[in-house]
Each structure stands twice: as C-alpha cells, then as structure tokens.
Amino acid sequence: MNSIEAHSIKIYLISNGIDARVGGDYLQGAMGELPALGIVRVFVDEKDEIRAKKLIREMRDTADDDDSWIPPALR
Image (cartoon, rainbow, N blue to C red):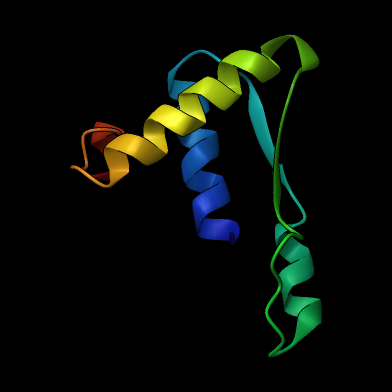
C-alpha cells in the first residue's frame, strides 16, 4: 500500500533469508496530495518469488494477531 508497508515487508523477507529491495518509494513525493497507491513495490529474485509470497501472506496473517513478525530491532 505504501512505503512503510513495503519497507516492513523488505525487512521481514531479509530476516528470513530472502534478498529484497524496495522500488518506487521516492515517486510518492511526485504525486503531491493524490494517493500514490501501487507505485511502491518490493522486488525479490525470481527464484525466491514463491517463498516470498508465502512469507508475506504469513506476515499479514500474523500481523492481525500480534507483533511477533516485527524484527526485534524494530520493536
């Protein structure tokens, strides 16, 4: 949805051994006050795509329950 969520996902993936990067987060400023949905994306290697999607689903499922998915350094 936004840069904060994308970077949270990136940190989660990296903490689970998947190299990830965020792209497009600087483009949000160009949008002004318009909602900048869909501009920010998390990129992973093609070989990690299936595992990354699974981890993201798990992250979102547990995010509703508690904050255990947040790396300790960010709590």
